[in-house]
Amino acid sequence: MDSREFLTTATIVMAMLALATLTELALPLFARAPAQRGRRTANLTLTALALSLNWAFRGAAAVVALGLSLQGPGPMSRLGIPIAAQIIGGLLVLDFSFGYLAHRTMHMSPLLWRAHRVHHSDTFVDATTTFRNHPLEGLWRFLFLIIPVWVLGLPAEAVALQRLLTVINGSLEHANIRLWPPLERVLSWIWVTPNMHKVHHSRVCVETDSNYGNLLSIYDRILHTFTPTHRALGVVYGLDDVDADRARSLPALLSMPFRAHESVAPRGTSCSD
Image (cartoon, rainbow, N blue to C red; front, side, top):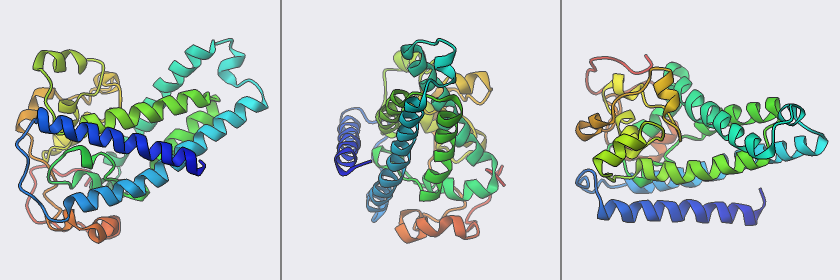
C-alpha cells in the first residue's frame, strides 16, 4: 500500500468515525458515560496502530489476489464462475473467515483471548471502540484473510469490498446509536446491527461468547452463536478481570497480552478460561 492509498484509507476511516460520532449525538442508545480520562486517547492511538497494520495486511492480500489473477485463472475462474459471482462469493468467504471464524477462535483460545480482551475491556462502547485492537490481533486476523485469498484465488475486488464494508459497518455497529426497533429486528436476521454487536460487548460471558459476526449475522444463526438483540438494552460493558484504570491506559493495554489477568471481581462464568 503506497502513501496515497494509505491516506485514502485513513480518510475513509476517520470520515466513518466522525459520521458515527455525529449519529451518536442525535440518536444515542445510552446516555454518554462520564468523562474517563485517557480513554479516547488510548482508543484513538490503538486505532492509528490498527489502521497502519490491518490496512497494510489487507492491502497485501489484495496484492496477492491481483498477483494470482495475473498468473492465470484461479480455481473459481477455472470453474467458469462469472467475475461478479466471484466477488460476491469472495465477500461471503472473507466475511466468514476474517469476520466470524477468526473472531470466534480468539474467544475460544485462552492465548488469543489475551490479545482480544484489549478490545473487550473498554468500559463504554462507542465509535472510538471500533479499532481499539491490539496489534497481535491484526496479525491473527490477517491469516484468516490471506489464506482464503491464496487457496481459492479470490479476486482483489472481493478483498477491497470486504475492507470497505468492514470499516463502514464496524464504525456503525460500535457506535452508541439506537435504531427503530422494528427495523433493527428485521435487519438483524441478515446483517450485524449495533444492538447485536453491543450484546457481544457484555460482561456476561454467555453473551460475550456470542454474536461474532462482522457483516452478516447468518453465520451466528446457522452455527447457534446468536443472542437476541433486545438484550443490548441491559448490557454492562467491560471485563470484570480488567481494572478500569488499566482499561484507559495505553501502556497497560499494549502490555495486556503479556501479563496475567488482574482479577478484581468474581465472575459467574469465565470467558476463555
